[in-house]
Length: 243
Ligand code: SF4
Image (tube, rainbow, N blue to C red):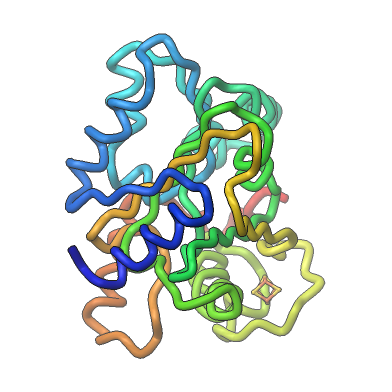
């Protein structure tokens, strides 16, 4: 097993999470399916990682009720806005909540930043069972690096792709904006698994989701970016992203 992943898994387990490794996205999908009972109602946090794993389609085919507000139909069409928000709220009361995360630290902490906060709420005292999935590219040394990664890499790339009118989308630099389009209003740092929530973290030995170290080779960064764009969607320039 990759040493970086092994270190993070050991640290997560010391911090009371139930942490595991999958070598591939296929293995990750099987691992997740094994932990979701067929009758369970499954709530979704917005996650490119989970889409790349192809979990939602398999869960729906298997007969699980999936509460996923982050479909192209619900997020792109203003006529579906009420449905989208209702589904976000319902997902918090699901049997199992599944989400990605912005960063996993080598000392075993989870760091996530949201615009709405539904993903953060879903990880804390919502569903009794929470499954968090992250690719190897989400592992950073510590919380300080995680917060820097979010502001310097993830938010600018995500805001740019989604057509948000933020300074970082235009320049690639965060200026702690007050833009109405700001996508990073709330940050959650989980240092130890919260009591009364069963929380597993699955680290996948592949690049998944949005996140990289700018020092990595340009080809690897571009591959991560393209793969993420294939499972997400942007707003056409004539259409404002919904607030
Ligand atoms: S605070 Fe504003 S400029 Fe900074 S990363 Fe967030 S959205 Fe971008």
